[in-house]
Image (cartoon, rainbow, N blue to C red):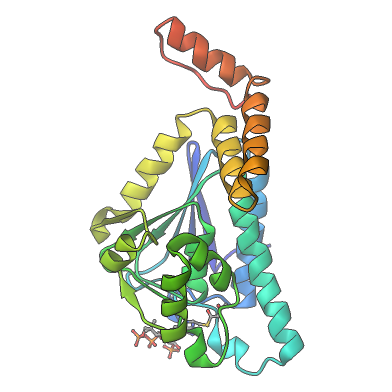
Length: 260
Ligand code: CAA
C-alpha cells in the first residue's frame, strides 16, 4: 500500500509516525485510517523498534478529528462501521508491543484527542488544544473518547468536556492529567524522541510487559491485576535481557540489552 497520508520514519530503535494531511488539518478519513492501520502492522512486525512517536504534520494540528465531510451522509450502519474501523485501529495502537508517545503539536479534537489517548504518553506543545466537540455535531465521540477520557481524567471532568464541547489549552490539559508534559513547539518532537530513546535504552521485553500489565491490569479487579503482574514478572526471568541487566549491575559494567 502506498502511504501518503501517514508517514513512517525510523531512527535507530525508534520510529516516528506523522499524520500527514495538513490541508485538512490531518483529519481522519477512511483512507488515512487504513494507512495508519498498515503502519501499525509494520511496527508490530519490526522487532528492532522499541518505542514510537506519533505526531501531526504542519504547524496547526495534531489531528482535527474524524473527517466531517466523509461522515456527513453516513447512515446508522455506516456510522457504526466507521466507528468500529477507528476503534479497531486505535486499540491496535494501545496494544502495540512498544510504547507510543503522542507529540501533540496543535489541535487534538474529536478523533484527534482520541488518537492521542490511545497512545501511552502525551507530550503537548504550548499551542496544543484538546476537546471532544462531537455533541456539537450531533454525534457521540466515536473512536474511544467516551471510554478513554474518563479513564484518564476521571468521570466528572470527562463528562464536562464531552457534554460542553469545551476546547482546552495545553496548560489545562496538564492540570487534569490529560497530558504528561507541556513544552515549547520548537522542541516538541525533540523532547518526544528523547523520551522514546530513553525508553529504548531499557530492556524492550520488560517495557513491553509493563505496558501489558498496566493496560490489562487497569481493566480488572486488583486480585486479577496482581496475577497479571506476577505472570509478566515471571516471564522476564525467561529472557536473556534479565540475566544481562542483573549481571551488568553486579559486575558494575554497562548493560547490553538484545531484546531477547
Ligand atoms: N474534518 C474534515 N475537514 C476538516 C476537519 C475535520 N474534522 N477539521 C478541519 N478540516 C478542514 C477544513 O474543512 C478546512 O478545509 P478547507 O480549507 O478545504 O475548507 C481545513 O481543514 C482547515 O480548517 P479551518 O479552515 O476550519 O481552520 P481554522 O483554523 O479556521 O479552524 C479548527 C481550525 C477549529 C480545528 C476547525 O477546523 C474545526 O473546528 N475542525 C473540526 C473539529 C472537530 O469538530 N473535530 C471532531 C470531528 S468528529 C469526530 O472526530 C468523531 C469521532 O469521535 C470519531
